[in-house]
Length: 446
Image (cartoon, rainbow, N blue to C red; front, top):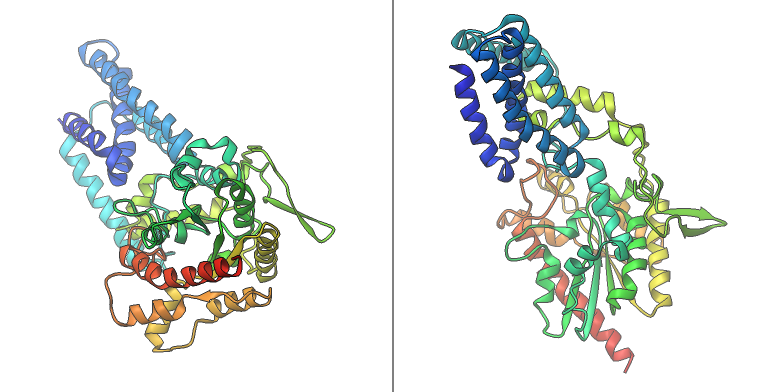
């Protein structure tokens, strides 16, 4: 009876899995347990109708599980999800083979009691775990899938779909074109009526189009490379480059599509592109440091036990890399971007976006002064001889006036990304300043 009910539940989960991360996580957990149980029953009693029926159902269930596992391993989830499926399948097979059919109700009751007991012990006797899931950690993405997105702007000739999506041919004929480059704060990916504030800026003037080549998990070195590769395609009058808190820590990050190295190498005091064509190399470290199984990342939303598991997993598999701030390297790449753009007669504007945690700290302390981390970004840009536009005051004022939710909660309660209201606020503040710069440049060229 338990197997029949569980099989029906798994089919329901499978139906909802394409549109629900939670359903996908549950399906990847329940499915292999069921398949292993049916196969184990066959092995326990291989002669007779029950064993034959078990083998048939195991094969039926294993087919979509194997297909999902392969698809997730190749396109979406970390390899640890595949390992999770294999371990559960083997465990269920072993138990069912040894014990045969288990009494359904007692098994369910004992399992539920054990889960609650473990959760209680973790809550009351263990220290507070790390905050999980961090931003985007519950999404169906793995490290090298992130790298695929990061690599698209660097090799546009090899990613035509990306070019068609971000640099639309019908917009390239606009009289004035503006290119926006940054990380996920610029990328947005809201969906619906608009993707980010960049789309809203395109609606302000009839003959001006704004192009968004923002890419999540990138910093100024990636932005410089993206500017170099997309400039001949977009031919913009102005490039707006955005700086965010994590830019201090993510400069010179290795890319799997660049031979596992950073996009630039320093030679004789000059920055030189390391890879002009894609060179994919997945190291063992990048494989092992992929995100934990989806089940645990989803369970961490409600379970302290799951958070401790993720904490231990991150400690065991994380690759060693210094997270020391690198303001000198950040400034070097921003200045290099300006030099490159000036050589091509293109304007350059740098905008510093405030970090949500810094704004909330200022609200808690009732301070008007920018956070020290934000000041470090401003000073880093200024030491390169560039005066940035500072978004601190406009965002802090909006947060104080309790305008509609400025930040999304999709990645957790401290997600730093703007929601719809935040993107609208930023577009309304930034639009007039971009237009003044464009008008001044046009007047100077007359």
